[in-house]
Amino acid sequence: MQEANKTRVSKVAFAFIMASFFMLLFLSSTFFLTSKRNIPNTEKDQYDTALRGNIITSDHFIIASSKQIYRAEVDLRSLDKGKLELFLKLFEIYSGSSKAQMQDIKKRLELAFKKNAYNFILSQNLDSKHASYLKELSKKLYVQGFFKAFANNNNKVETRGLSISLHKEDRNYMSKDTLTPVIGYTRAFFDEESKMLKNIGVKGLEKYYDECLLPFQNEKVQGLKDIGGNIILDLNSVQKRKINGCDLYTNLHLKLQKTIEKAIDQRNADLNASEIIVGVMQSNTGKILALASSRRYDPSNRGKDLSVLNASAVEYAYETGSVIKPFIFTTALRLNKLQLNEQINTHNGYYKLGRFTIQDDHKAKSMSAEEVLVYSSNIGMIQIAKRLSNFEIVSGLKIFRFGEKSGIDLPYEQKGELPNPSRLRDIEKSVLSYGYGLKTTFMQLLAAYNVFNNDGVYITPSLANAFYQNGKKVDLSAEFGKEKILSSTAAKQIQNILIATTEKGTGRKALTEGIIIGGKTGTARIAQKGGYSTTRYNASFFGFANDAKNAYTIGVLVRTPTKPYSYYAAQSALPMFKDVVDILIQEDFLEPIKP
Image (cartoon, rainbow, N blue to C red; front, top):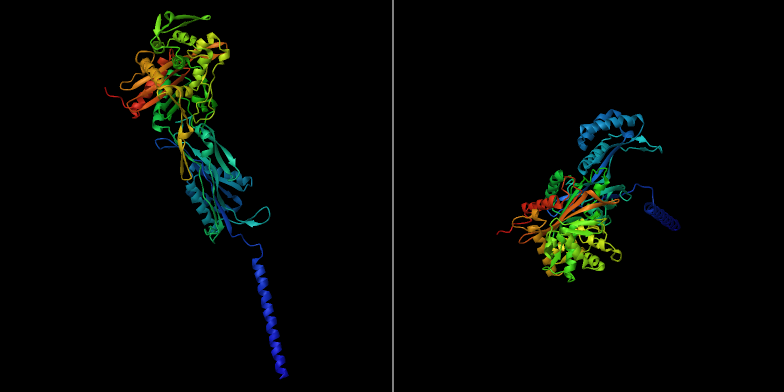
């Protein structure tokens, strides 16, 4: 009996010891499995870089866009020289490289082998399609053991082979030099986050809307990877989707712009001017449908002449000549210092002003107030200016926004210059009345003339109307203001006088059957050291062209034409204005009114 009890106790003790052993084993295993160990990382990060946004015309053409450019490189230590020809042949097929490009690669390879270099760039101008082909090729070659292992500088054995990486964001301009310098251009900069070259706006729309066009958010996917190295998307994975820069929608009409640019080039082949600028503005909205220049460039291949890159329509301020007269005239009307039916003494076309004698082309003893504008009498304008105080004449110009930026969506816009009324002498006030002693820009004049064709309302010119980003469209019309600055009666009076100017005065060459045309010519000598040039002029014509439904304000500036006698606006700017009106009819923007 005692022996049986001893045996029972022994068995229980043995069972307890074994249970304790297995419990210890379980606990130690659990600790080992849950503790940090030096095991391969099962997580993977995957990135996709967002791109700069597109710029789009009103006729639905993408005129500026971006694409990803990839680089292909190979570690020469992983290449078996006996397989080099096969590797190069495969690379040629998958990359779409030309024979000339492959010849260049082979020449550079010879030099690299001689110098014992190992990081060799095969190409750094691959599009996304060929980059994806090469990534597949790299995987296949790696799996098949095509690349050999080597000892790196740390004496660790590794295999590198062919690698494909994002190199830069390339900005493309589909229309080449069309719409320049308005569209502007970008320059490349190295982005630390994405480790690649990106673009930042420098001029034109690219600069003004740079913050909107810049990429907003890169794509990031993070999670566990499967045996093939692909990320497993589950509740624990992290995803940030790609948000490209905004798509910018403009008021510019590509076909109209190209047609006007062609007409400008044809006209300038005869005039040989330093620049011709043309603007077409929808009068009731302020939308710029075309803003063309003869000084254009390819944004992707800019030349050495940096002045060509400037948008002269807003960056070049000049003395205007007679196109300023309607604004002085309007000021006198508005202040009841002038009546349309009164006679103005024009001194038979000759008038002594200081040591100079002013001559009118249309000589008369006197003219009606309307005729002073119709026949562009400098002498008549001097008499009208005398009725205004210095403060009144300068304040009258400020009402039309001269001396301040028009507010158009272009960078580096100039304000121009107005004289200080407290320092304005009588002779300076006299020459101010016909366009000397102040400076304005093309865009200031275009916006100011628009008031006469828009019921007295000043409206800020605009190149863009909306942008689209992240599934949301934002209207930009609220960014461009409107203000009634002139009574409807006064605006109509000046509009009628400008129509009379084209019917029987200095603007007759602009007449187009079935279209309501009005406007004013201006010819001004260019200031130089010691006075004014006798050979260099700016010639301009600003006005409007309307049919039964549509109204457009149009400006033309011809800078320093060199053809003999072409410095007269009637010989240069006016025919160019007529070309533009004909184009507007041809492209169905205007429809001649039937008798």
